[in-house]
Length: 75
Image (cartoon, rainbow, N blue to C red; front, side):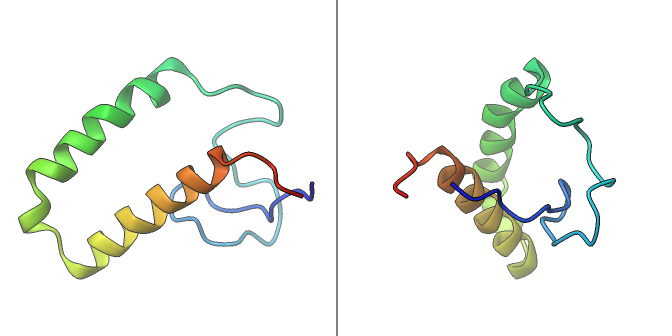
């Protein structure tokens, strides 16, 4: 399996170097990261009618990336 290109943890943009990260290499997700996901999903569901097109694209891109990361390695 190849290592994915480094991306900004906030916007998902490709990074020119690996120094821009919220987590150090090998660090596990903290409980607040995992426990905030259902709350974030609820807020998006509750306020979906108010989202701009750009916000909808950001939510879609983020969820797609997370789901892709959970897929079993098929290589």
